[in-house]
Image (tube, helix red, strand yellow):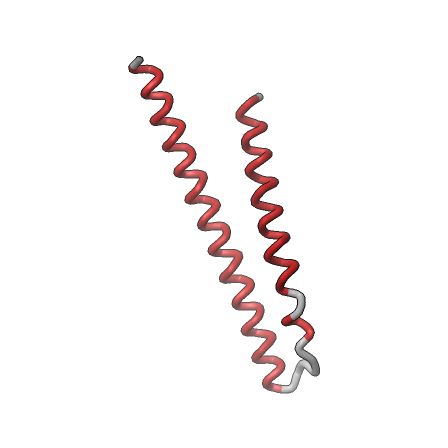
Length: 82
């Protein structure tokens, strides 16, 4: 019984660490996207960019990030099974 409980606690700890890692990655990605967006807006205001087309492309990035996160989770789960 003690070993089972120890294993469960260890697994929960690993899941918590993994969740925190994913949370940090997503936060860094969002900060990077925000920085790029603000940079392009600044360029537009200064007259270096002629159009606001970069505003329409943001939807694809968010979907792509979700797919990448799902793929990483799937790969991690598969590696644990093996």
